[in-house]
Length: 112
Image (tube, rainbow, N blue to C red; front, top):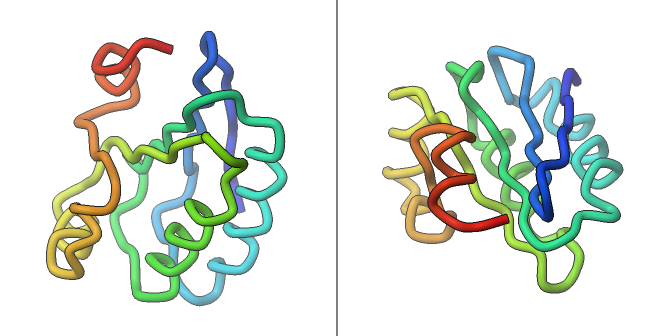
């Protein structure tokens, strides 16, 4: 699972470098997210701008990643393509996560 991270102030930006988060990669995604966020400061932004497909396993892995965040650390999402945004909207997960247009706008929306 190709995930890269970058720290900007107190924010951790995690970029997904894969076109899909689905059943074959969901467990690896969740494990990699746990590794990357173990010492996250106050906020993590998951940049999904390269992801054009997500299934229920992928959605479950993202929700599990949110639940395994350290205490006091939020998980925001950014860069949702239309197909991915539709999954979040139909499952009402768009009411659970704060969703930003891009990782850059996430940084501007809330100070890090």
